[in-house]
Image (cartoon, rainbow, N blue to C red; front, side):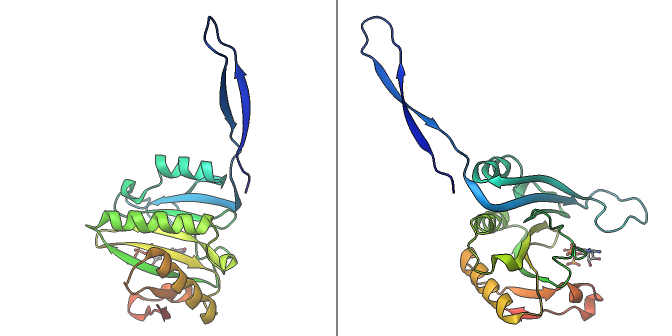
Length: 209
Ligand code: MGP
């Protein structure tokens, strides 16, 4: 990561005042390990008849420095700014937040739900997760695709998308680490995308932590 460097600068002064020296800090942006992209999907608006899932999904910003991240996060990207039936996503640049993306196709998601009247719960978990991802806190970082915050009438949720649903050891390790980062006692469940595609009554969770 790039570090800040400080340079002493002579500031000319008038009259009898003693010469002043200030520390001018040359800011070098703090580079992240990799590039990330924020996305948004607002499904609250009426869709054209027959519109496919994903037609309202939009990539918002791509970034690769800590400074850009905080600027984007502070200005817009908080779940409290979402209407019901809208999602925010943070995914690795180059990966689209859809089952159809080659990086996601064989994967699934760890999910934690949050009661809708506890907005601050989702807000806090979203930020903790964003920082863990861009800070590369997961040992299996290469196995992670991104995270989705979903605001829903019944229950808000946060889902961590991973790459290889069939690899139980990797998924359990990611799930345990995420639970530790979130600092919650709630049960987290893992669903393979292939299982999410089934009828509601046929959907089942594969792993739990
Ligand atoms: P969802 O957005 O993951 O859950 O998927 P939501 O809206 O909370 O609803 P619930 O079903 O969990 O109660 C909702 C539906 O959107 C899915 O059943 C799919 O029909 C569709 N869908 C969701 N995703 C993430 C995808 C995707 O990546 N690709 C496609 N083709 N459809 C998807």
